[in-house]
Amino acid sequence: MKKVLIIGNGISRLSYQKEIEEFDGERWSCNYSFIDFGHMVTRMNGELKTFKDSVEYREKNGCSYKIIADPKLSPYSDEPYQSDEKYRKDSGTSLVAEALHRGYDVYCVGFDLGGHDVYSPKHNKIGKGGWVTRWRIIIEDFGHDRIHFIGHDHLPFLLSNEPANTYAKKYMKNQSHIPTPEFQEVFKDLDESRLDRVMKYLRFETVVNISKRDYTFRDGLFRSGEKRMMPSGEAEDLTNRYPREFKIMEEKQK
Image (cartoon, rainbow, N blue to C red):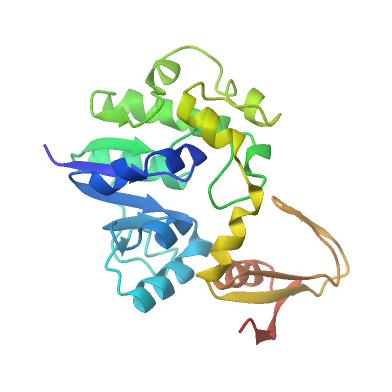
């Protein structure tokens, strides 16, 4: 049976670079992971705001991965999803369901089911019990025989009756929620400033809040009159959603 390695962005991934490089099969990944794996993955998906940056990176670096996305929602889609729309709630589980639907044996690495993220600071402050619920729906629909985790095996938890927020109760308090020695080592050496590395590979824009009110987003408060730098795709997404509140400044990062 054909197999695929789906690369998540949880910090446990940092312990398995060798396994990723030596995997004998296709590799898929999501969001900003093209920075690290664009040269080896064949398909990607992600939040809509990441696609522009993904396409620019692909063209600049000679990568060949295809973007799986709904063409009705994104002009950057190379191929549509084939699986049912009910699975398209977040990037990782959407890829898992898509691969299972296409008949793959699925191997997952960097799937921590919440907690710290390789690219997104403060990601552990967001409860991801919904991810667990979606995993359980996928298992109910497809079974678990073709699902394999590299590193910590989450299947016993996913197949149990434990509450979906069991992990979140730990990582939201900045506590380790995965007991493996490999994860403990990565967790101990965690450095939130690692996002600075992303800035070396993406084009950034300066966005200004031109409204008279403050907006609260996942990464904090965006105050009236404040200027903030963000990846160009994210800037485009924000200003398209709130055209009267946010504006991209003409000057761009050199």
